[in-house]
Length: 470
Image 1 (cartoon, helix red, strand yellow):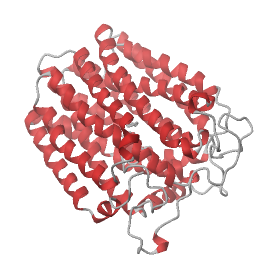
Image 2 (cartoon, one colour):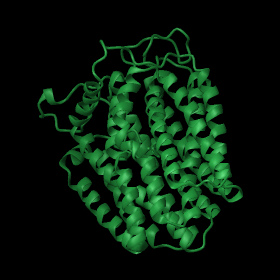
Image 3 (spheres, rainbow, N blue to C red):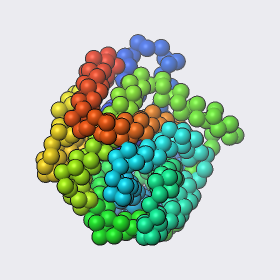
């Protein structure tokens, strides 16, 4: 999860942040007596870009999606983006589950499994920031097309290796790294492109559909990955290659220009990256929540590997693991569907505190359970909160970030929050191999207690709670 763009999320990516409905307030939630210079004015998406409805061929480069607009179900460019990105993320979900399963069931080593998960998470540290700046500079549709094409070839190579039983851990690590790095470019481009194909008043509905799509992908993709892996160990990777091929075809038919409007001559890359970092840093509320969710994402990575090891240690098969992941996906889907109702009734402070209290109770409990049904139900509760956060956070960021900074701010947020995934993978592999699941649960509980206290006691988060729900 990320704040507020929210992986796998993404991700997401795997993927959290403050609730929506705060339009017209300072983006950082700080009191009004803070110096004006410290508060860069957010640009309301689409406020200065008139034009026709999404899907028009004549939209200027980088134009925000205009108003009024046709319903989302008739906005063909949105539907093409939604389907294409969904297929690509479906493939990533299947493969990201299959990578560690392939290594764990082939070598029996939790440490090797942690290495593969670390390689998949490492691009969050190395690629995230330059990806955001380059997405703001390049044609976002072409970025997604190239990513789909290269990932399709990478998945095909892993499928071929698994078919011939060439399961060499460094090779799997390299493939996971490449796929994840390209996935970051793709996810960043897709997230910031939504506001180019829908008008601002449809952003909550569009982002809720995206989050529900992501939850449904987790619901279907993760169990399917385990099922395919049980049938043939190379099959999940072959399926992902086909999904990327179809996604590539969908994206070629998007007609609207998806580039950001140029604001001047290109700067050096590190200066453009700095602009996004500085903008996010000056938003006090977002700065605090970014740090909190960085810790939460580290724990989510630990939780994922812990569930895998617990199920294997108690005789579960990859198919059982997939079903548990599917039950968790139901929770995420329900959270996404409930986000609109929730955001209208509950403020920022209550959302942040209640969500972390739920995680504090449920997340360590997963490591101590043995029955797959119980693990799945508890994981569903965890993912319900995550789905809620992701929709609300995505709307908040899209409304408050200038279009020319969308990619960079999105990438900065994801870098800081999802970058912790790499450390979480290594920590989980070490703790599970050396200390077992009980001590892993204790460590997760201790970290979550600190994060919950930080959210509860923060003056900036509490100040944001004074805002009325949407």
